[in-house]
Image 1 (cartoon, rainbow, N blue to C red):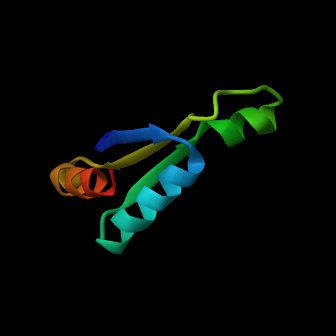
Image 2: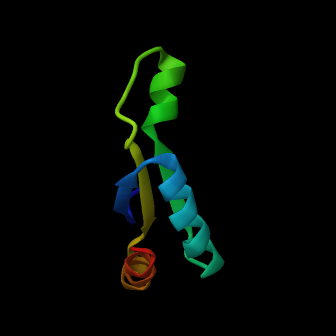
Length: 70
């Protein structure tokens, strides 16, 4: 994740919606779901523990789409 930047932390529904829009614009995404990791390990984490990362080179373009989604 050396060249990845976190652009959003939210619930899984929101993250998947934003990721879908970004991928449709040819922006590669990486989703880090700590909720699922915590569940599998047997402990809880906050609901808004899903993080969305993108390549640093796509930051400006991705921020525009995220802003449009509100």
